Image 1 (cartoon, helix red, strand yellow):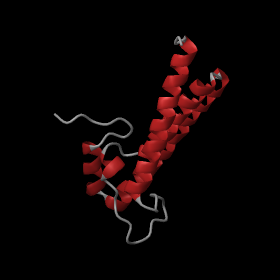
Image 2: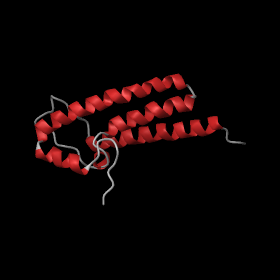
Image 3: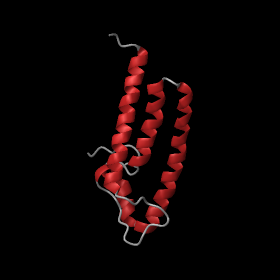
Image 4: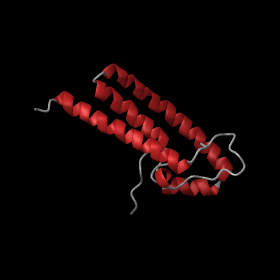
Length: 124
């Protein structure tokens, strides 16, 4: 058995897709049933633990990993057009952050300083 470039790309894609599924599941468990939206119920609390302690938008990170990994698994580079969806998720995340700042104010702003939006911050 010899590794070809295709095998390496497909292996990398599989790792990205598996990471995306694990991160999405971890995010759902960390957040609970409700996601932030303009119609958050009165008792909604800010999720800052679990996956949300690593990045502020773990679900969008998981989708982005999938958008990169899936085309690699199939070796279908036309599917890389899905990567354009990442730009849309960035816009959605920015709007969600505006909603969360209105709802949680300084608590959310402090969270923004501690936790990266899509990339984990290294503590120093």
